[in-house]
Structure formats: structure tokens, C-alpha cells
Amino acid sequence: MFCKNCGSQIDDNASVCVHCGVPTNPAAKHAEKRTNVLAIVGFLLSFFIPLAGVICSAISYKNADREFGGDGKNFALAGIIISAVYLALYVVAIVLCAVLWLPTFINVWTSILAA
Ligand SMILES: [Zn+2]
Image 1 (tube, helix red, strand yellow):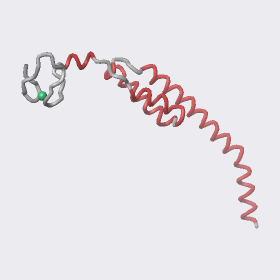
Image 2 (image 1 turned 45 degrees about the horizontal axis):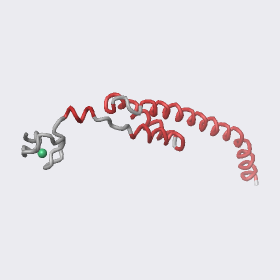
Image 3 (image 1 turned 90 degrees about the horizontal axis):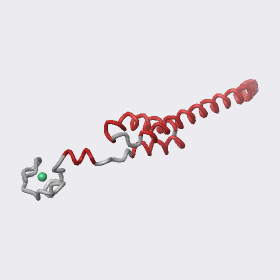
Image 4 (image 1 turned 180 degrees about the vertical axis):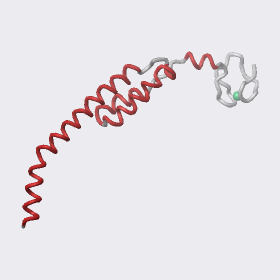
């Protein structure tokens, strides 16, 4: 047979053209299960950088069905939930710190300004 991409003659059983590297059978490419790497990356990021984790997880969740045949959907969903929980905890922690430290900051600054 001939390569659909470059027109070179190739082996009938070849799955990839030896001349240009393009797959000979698009159906075989579809059947091949791809790993949703971004879902795993997003899941791991959610523990350390929740904002990046939630973005990666949301993108990989959106693409999971269309591009990966549903692969990584659970990882992506877990990443979104974990990121959301961590983000909420960070916000609570920041607000608590601000509320607890604000009077101290005000006291320090007023005493500096008064001096
Ligand atoms: Zn070719």
C-alpha cells in the first residue's frame, strides 16, 4: 500500500509509515488508549499548588471524554475536589491570620507613628 501522507510505498502490515512516521490506519490510532497525563498532574498539583491543580484538573476533566475515552476522569474530579478543599482552607487561614494579626499591626504602626 501507499502512505496517505507522503505517498511512499510501505508494507501492507505497517502501522506507521517508515518514511514520514504518520500512522497508516487512523482507526487504529483511535482504538489506542491514551493516558490522560494532565489529570494525574492536576491531581498531584492539587496537594501543593491548589490553584494550578484546579486549573489542570478542570482542563483534563473537560478533555477526558473527548480525547482520552474517559481516562483520567476520576483523577481529574478528585483533583478538582482536593484543590477546592485546599483553596478553601488557604482562604480561611489567610482570613484568620489577618483577623488575628490586624490589631497587632495597628498597635505597632500607631506606636511607631506616635513616636
Ligand atoms: Zn509516509
